[in-house]
Amino acid sequence: MDWFTIKNIDAIDSPALVIYKDRVIENIQLLKGMVEGKVEQLRPHVKTNKIAEVCSMMLDGGITKFKCATIAEAEMLAMIKAPDVLLSYQPVGPKAKRLAALVEKYPATKFSTVIDNIHAAEYLSQVFSEKKLFINLFIDLNTGMNRTGIIPEHATQLFEAVQLLPSIKIIGLHAYDGQIRDTDLTLRKHNVDKAFSKVLILAATIEALSKEPLTIVAGGSPTFPVYADRKEVECSPGTFIFWDWGYKQTMPDEPFNYAALVITRVISIVDEHTITTDLGHKSVAAENPFPRVHFLNAPEATPISQSEEHLVAKVPDASLFKTGDVLYGVPVHICPTVALYERAIVIENNTAVQEWKVIARDRKITV
Image (cartoon, rainbow, N blue to C red; front, top):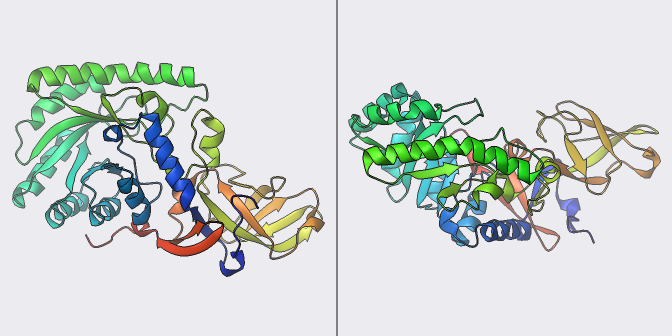
């Protein structure tokens, strides 16, 4: 029996998201091994899994610091009593007030967030001052991703301006270098070090001004192996927990294994070379070009088109398939795929044993 085969598959309707619990545990252990067991260096991003039970497994593994992108993810972490949560998404508008509400509701969790401009800092200061609360901040740096963040050369001025504001304090720097995805690890390390050199210069400048050490949070799954060797950096991989086809192909040096799949069934035989499954746009992330999913038990099946409820695939011989056949798929991108499902089926010993709610796919839990 293959590792992914589910004995009681007839009890699982499709499409479905399935999580192999033992493989999740293995990926957590592999992560810890890459920092030589120094779990204090780890700050995993939970945007991939969005599941309280999965995050609890990381807590059980000794990981106490986490990163997230939404208020719901932050609340999910607080609900399981995660000690340290960084919201790495600059809160503007109502999000700032929701963050203050989280700080008020969950005092056992130490929250922080990021800023990249003085206007956002002033608004956070106002919101938290009105509530008589306090929040720690990280300066979000643009080291080449060109999505958010202030360029390091301008960040000292921002630091000095924020020092004058009440109810907030800058305690660190945040740098996400998602643009660095070189398959060759040597080239990837070169590009990471080049971008990160500006972060180190900035950190030294600010520490000289403040006389206090800064915490640096950097990287994601592609650059994690490089930062794992930098003991002064908190590393933030996210996809490692489930892994996916995209990273398996582009980052072959990373040891993580597939731990989450999508289950689909053949619903129609179109012609001698074409089959249709029930894995539509609503069931697997559709932002990538075809193929968006690869089938472990039918590697010859090549997806060619997709609509809301259907995925059409070309096969060498459609007579080898019949309606109702189950295909086990690895998404090219697992993170947005997980967000498409309300619940995940948990697999242990090749058997579906329970369901976990993908609680943080919701925009709001209670706050």
